Image 1 (cartoon, one colour):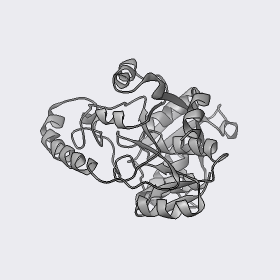
Image 2: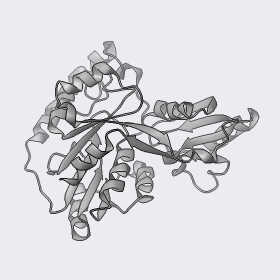
Image 3: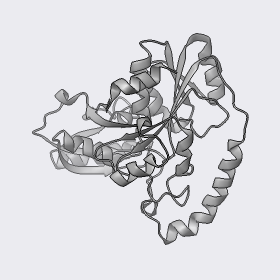
Image 4: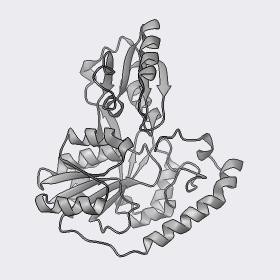
Length: 305
């Protein structure tokens, strides 16, 4: 979904209340979809998703999980085919096999022929699949916004639905204590995990230089925070909608601006994967990975399913 999150999603306000009746209709549709027969597969399944639309770190967590479970089980990623999410498919492919199909049920049917485990990047809202482990992700900076369902707010379903998911991940620095306590009223403390982004290719950059950064991802502020935490000097930032397809004019504008201000250019790995060979010239990308707190405890949860 190519969107920049509207400002009114952050707090309850007149616009969100005007849109709220539409959200109630969506809530009714979501409720009706819950009462469906679930299909169970022979293959072990881990679904990593969110209820907050975009930018929660589910792809990064899916990769981190793959690195753990693939040592014990022959594992594949499953990604539902959306033409505007080829960047995520390419990113997953750098780490393992990806089954990219129009329907998740079809993908799982294919996966169970050759694999022992499947990690689904997104899919919590598909209620007709019985997953072995369901993980819901939140980013620490935005949490649940105004706590309204789309379009009045940023949620895909009610916050209370986290009671139906096995684990909760809060990804990013300095999570809000009130938000953590809100989660704890629904989930046991032992089922809440935390993770931070860290840069894995820092040696490729000169931290004495000044940088222009650009991105078209769900949570561009986390990208900026990760750079600042690593002591990058950011002089200019340009934000595009999530899963944005860059044009030649966009890249020309970015490169001309950087040249005039004598800045080096950095983007995210996801954004970099959306560029063609010529567009990638003079642009570097930041490679990140998740550092999971209580990793041993998390590994036990994964390997016992």
